[in-house]
Amino acid sequence: MVDRFPIEAGHIMLFARSVGDTNQVYYDEDYAKTTEIGGIVAPPTFVQASAQFEDDYSLRPTIGEDWFGSGKEPTGVKREPGGTGGGGLHAEQHYEYHRNLKPGDVLHSVNKPGESWERESKRAGKLMFSESITEYYDQNNELVITARSVGVRTERPVDQG
Amino acid sequence: MALKASEIKVGDEYTEVVADNLTRTQIVQYAGSSGDYNPLHSDEIFTTKVGGYPSIFAHGMLSMGATGKALTNYVGDGRLTKYGVRFVNQVWPGDTLTATIAVEEIRDEGGLQLVDLTVSTSNQDGREVVRGSATARIDA
Figure 1 (tube, rainbow over the protein chains, first blue to last red):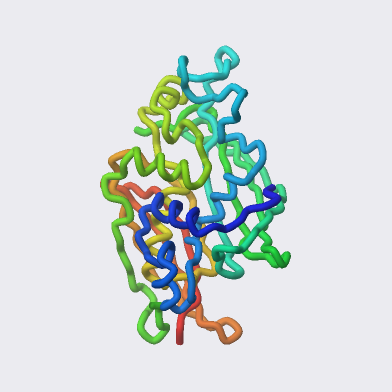
Figure 2 (figure 1 turned 120 degrees about the vertical axis):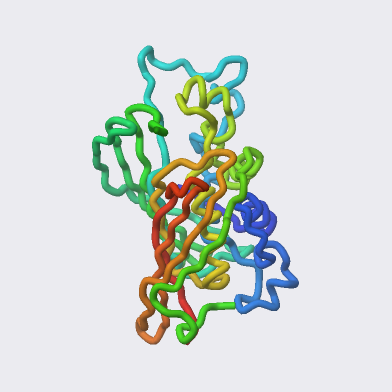
């Protein structure tokens, strides 16, 4: 859940660059004004960046707390002996767009739990799926984007063979 | 420019290379912009020694975002009503990704012209990495 996700032009530019999208509509206001949509808009997967505004987001280091990535050691977090799980991966992502996002919008989101299920796989052992639904509302409390995400925890790292 | 229903037909395909020799630096850029700093995507030491993978790999959402570039280049900016994918294989540094968008159905819904598309992105070995679908508003 995110209480306040301000949609900012600079952030849209950085995000578009990071997915390799050079479309001027994501950074050039003068150009964007001449297009059908009449201004800068966010690219289709931009709301994923709401993680930046999520308190205690688990995939962002927190000052003063151990981080599971490497420093002096390959990981900064002690693991249980024998715990060799492959960890969490993103399995599916779905968006429904109710209107375009533009700089100046201020979103908040509401999470709803989805279903959970399990499946055996040859490449990664037992797969544990869990779904979550996130609804993004704008400053007028109107629904802008509905997102459905499926995460998977694998029993072991995915075999690349 | 948005697509026109009169100018497309079922089975039409649009193909675009959406990542060419994907660099670790671009994956780091994505971590920075999205806020997903999972070390599996930037920290080779953690990923090989603790994660058990041969190298860092891209965020699934980077491949979805790159594939989204092909979609918006095809249907026009701000025209999508739905976009969803499954991440069927991991994307690694050095991969070249090609997205293929195919027209599945052209339909009228309450006076709106819509196109349903299938979306598939594969790497240089022809291995599919992203598979999904999208719907967009088009002009008559």
